[in-house]
Amino acid sequence: PTEAGLDTAMVVARFADATEVLKLDVKPLRQTFELYSNTLLAVLRACSGHVVQWVADEVQMWFMSTLSAFEFCMALQTELLTSKWPKDIERVYATKLSGPVLIWN
Image 1: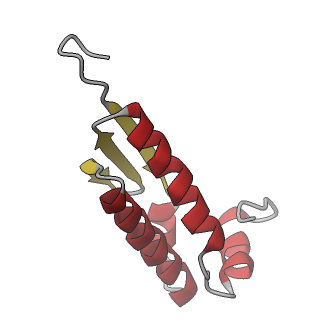
Image 2 (image 1 turned 180 degrees about the vertical axis):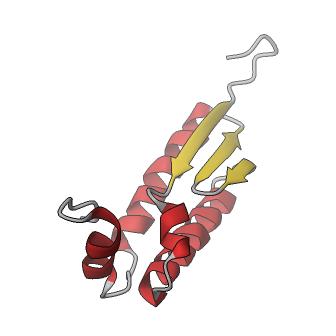
């Protein structure tokens, strides 16, 4: 808690390699970034969070309480895990960005 008794929290989210993803002319990758961004913003609104700064692949968000920040993180992970992602994303993402390293699971 702060001196005024407010329990605020910051959360930072990062879409790995988003800058590289957006450089590629591959429709599934762009759709993936759009889905991620739209999902993040929808969950952020639902949890009464606010974007402090969004630069390239990193989003800094502010919440009125640690609990609302935690609820946001859990809700975002749940939404991302249950989202319908483009079918080609694993194949294209792994070959175009990471070589032999699997970064999409």
